[in-house]
Image (tube, rainbow, N blue to C red):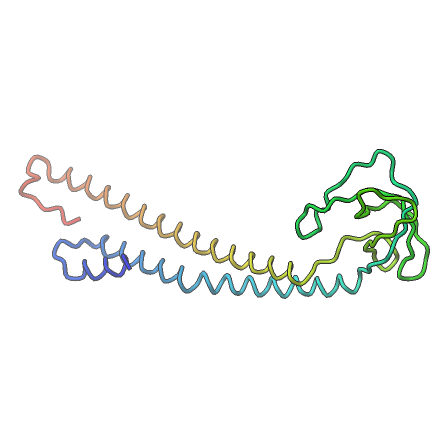
Amino acid sequence: MRAIGGIWRWRHNPLRRGTDLAEAWVALSALLLILLVAPVVGSVIGTVAQDVLQRSVREQRLSHHEVTATVVREVAGSPLDVDPETTTGRETRTRVVADWTAPDGTAQHGTVLAGLRTPHSGDRFAIWTDGHGRPAPRPLDSVTATTHAVLAGFGAALLTAGAVEGGRRLIVWRMVRRRYACWDQAWDRAGPDWGRTGTGC
């Protein structure tokens, strides 16, 4: 609104300089770009990110399998680990030696993280594996993927708006520098008769 008001105010003002009107037009152009282009960029980036992430969700659902493992023993001296793949990131897990059956039917044995605070031999818990039974990360869920896509779109819109505002400030800075240089030249020409001489800048 300040840009629009500036253009209207300087429209027929006899004191208007060319740079005043130019600065107002630059501000208006930047405002329109922020209001119109930034949301479009954010929407496009968010949509692309959503497509990519949802495709990854579908692929992980096909390649990752949840199986039941049986505790053989707890790993000696194993501290409680925080599972970064949970929704809150605060679920603690314990390292145990366990047996499980892979999706292809082969028997597997190894050290994995169990969602048990005090695991005992024979306790059962769920783990995620790939098609060959190797432990795999928890697959990405659809809600988390959508959240990441929304954040990506929002971030792209903010970056676009920031870039436009940065460009506006750079242009105005260069205009001001040019204006000051013009004033310096006018003062040099005016000399001691500055009170009777117009600069035209």
